[in-house]
Image (cartoon, rainbow, N blue to C red; front, side, top):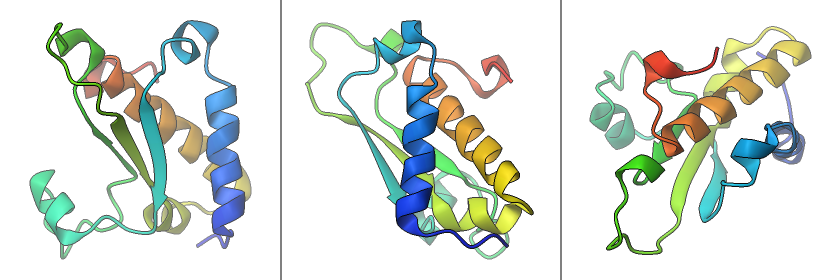
Amino acid sequence: MISLSRESFQRLIQQALEDLPEEFASRLENVALVVEEEPDAKVLEQMGFDPEEAADELFGLYQGTPLVERDTGYADVPDRIVIYMGPILRSCRSPREVVREIRNTVIHEIGHHFGLSDEEMPY
């Protein structure tokens, strides 16, 4: 497991956001991106994971309504992207791998914001 401060982890997330292509970055509004240590058992169950076995399998979570599913009645409540620090750090064996996994997770969850399914993700 890689050891990294929460501050350093958040800086890597910020770098991943800054590296987004402009066509996505310019449309990423009203989305709160937060870091949590671990997904709780309720979240794991809602995602179809066994909480006893899958605590290290969920790296991020998009909570909201994808842009492609919104209509004129959509409330202006921020969507939320959660990045789970513990599972990412436990799954990586090098700092370079942490950077890559954070980048992939941020892109993956932002992809859900834009309406992409897991199969449509760009990596």
